[in-house]
Image (cartoon, rainbow, N blue to C red):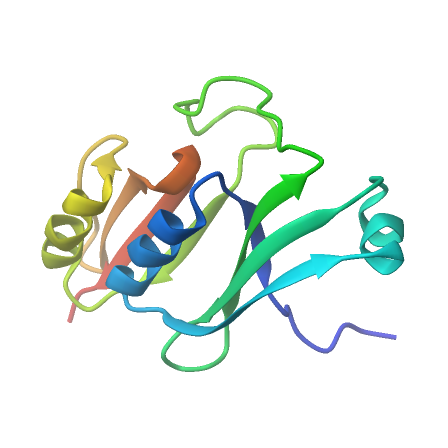
Length: 146
């Protein structure tokens, strides 16, 4: 049996409102917010006493979603600095296609985005960069060139 699709990518954050604002500014659409708790959440996560606030966002094309979660309990933990380099084992990034990379970076700066390196050109195909977004998450941006 094959998978049907990738449903969403989940990111645990401390400041849910700031993370939602960042991804909405990027161009995602807020589908909704809610709370998750109870035995099913405990069983699924392998944690006891799960109670978290979530926000579900989707890309404008409707094909991809991002779930942001802020844990009320148990309290979220950090396993190191939030500004880890890109090559740390287990480090993940989320990549988005954008129509104007430089404008997107400029719009995200007031929301805390900082370039990890710089804007790079891949042949005559793409402009690419990584920015550090909410909670230190690396967000990749790619502009396809004509």
